[in-house]
Length: 332
Image (cartoon, rainbow, N blue to C red; front, side):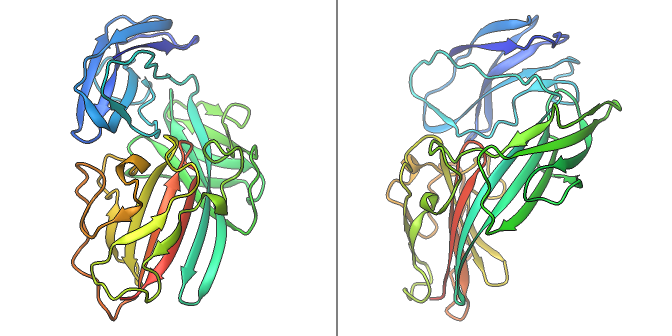
């Protein structure tokens, strides 16, 4: 595998540059160490085993304090949430990007359609995120943007890996607009501060559609639904939306009882994966106790109960974190 890592102008390298590929299935890293990186392009070559599943994530880490850890002051793209890469042949042009900002802001949209025994409804939500980049954020405030009360302080996300501040907000039937801009004030551990002129996020189109996420992006024909089946170990099926096979999308599945207890979730909570791809489940079928993600080993807890109502959903997510989720109920 070959490519280049560009150290942006304005960043003076004071430590080694690590670049390579992380296998999400085996949790194995294959990398190269560039002892004296330079501003501009740094070429690398890394040898990795063949893997036909989209398990690899290309990464780069500029270890500014040369302590072998990813911590405050280091420059890294390890927070990337793009789909994994299958590697079956030598590739060139694998060029992970190092950030130039002190922190990065994202605004993801979610469209939800929910069917219960009482009827159906649909709603929109906004998911704001401010993530550590070249400095360590310690306080974040959303200062402006449409469809939100502001200013509002944003809490830290614990267990997210990288230092990150998250805010999830339902906005009801209000439809966001591609390009809606939200500004943030971010305070860092060194006492410095950035404002909305440098830390802001925009609503993006869903995948390659060019439009805001909506009903046309949902998985449909969810089955079983209501009392359509007597099985306590059902096979779940659905119809993929148009363009489902695009590498821009990953899918997830969740099944819970009517009190919110999780029965089965793909990917699992402790998974290294963001979801399964169309190629991993092209038939849109989940057989009971069968996980489409190799190595994830997600399995349901026991069998279903004929006296209990369950809720399950299929969610599709693009590379910007925008989501479309269709949920239904089932009682065997």
